[in-house]
Each structure stands twice: as C-alpha cells, then as structure tokens.
Length: 223
Image (cartoon, rainbow, N blue to C red):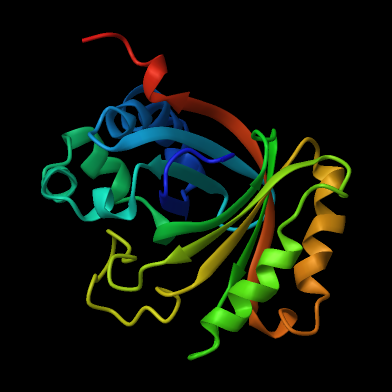
C-alpha cells in the first residue's frame, strides 16, 4: 500500500508573511518530529503550494483513524508546547481533516501532490466511492505514482483554531490525493475527476503542492 497505515490527519493553513519564517522553523524543528513520535503515528509529509490555497499542507499517516481520537492524542492536543500554541494561534483559513484511507493504489510517493476536495451528497457515498475506485488507477497515467482517497470523519474533523463550535459544512468532505513526479503530470490525472460529469459537481477545490520534506518513524533517533 503506497500510504502507510489506514488513518490520515490532513492539515492546511495560511500564515502571515511576517510570521512565516518562525512558522516554518517550528514545523521543521519541533512539530513534525513531535507528532511522528506519538504512538500510532507512522510518518508525516510537508508541502507548499505550487498552485493552491491554503499555502501549506501536511499529511500525517497513522495506523488507524482511532489513533486520532485516542486518549494519548487528545491529551497531547490539550497540552501543546508554548512554541506550538504561539504558532497555532497565527493559523489562517485552517483545514483539518481526520480521515480513513479507503482507497490507495499504486507504488510509492511522488515529489508533487495533486489534491481534490469533494463534498459527497447525502446518501450518495457508496455510489461515489465506486465511481472513484475506477478513476484512482495510476497505471496508464505517465508521471503518476499513486492515487488515494481520504474520507473525513465529520465528528473528528474540526479546526483547532477559532471557534470549535462554529458550523463546519466541510467536516465530512473527502480528498483525492494524486502522487506525481512533476507538476506537469497532475492535470491529466485531475481531469479524471474535475471533468467527470458524475464527480465534477461535487468538487469543492483543487490544488497542486510541492513536497518540502517527509519524516518516518524509522528516521527518529533511537530512544
């Protein structure tokens, strides 16, 4: 399976230019390693937009979606470091999805990520999943390494900034991930969804992101 584990935390946000250097320093020197070191977390990847909004995107793979509602993880969220609290308070336009990886096809990970956000119609989830399964095959797409479907848990998918009780119509959205070798390979793969008459009305947003770096559990210093 191209993505390790069965669960995924997706976070995306903008940050003011004045705070960007500190934000990136925090992510690169504390946050990613802190998360990957947690029980049940397997790896993490950081991206920056080539053509997309918000500007920054991170993916955290977990053994299962239950890891992202575990007592350990909930305790960690409630006890962030001072550096984390300062940076999280600066997030703008945050997206936070807690997802199951329901489809993952191909081999390996690419240097570029295409992402398509979908909003399933009520009661149409099974039909949409079946339609997507046929499209999530990278075999005949040059430069596409693997393709995946993330299905958000609407209860767990809440931003940790602003008012957590505010309406969140996108909490149950799905994300198609397209792992590619180059930005030029993404449009043909994305067209399978954005130009598909059955899927196109459900597309909320799309973007293309470049990999900044990744971190696996096996990369961490031995205890």
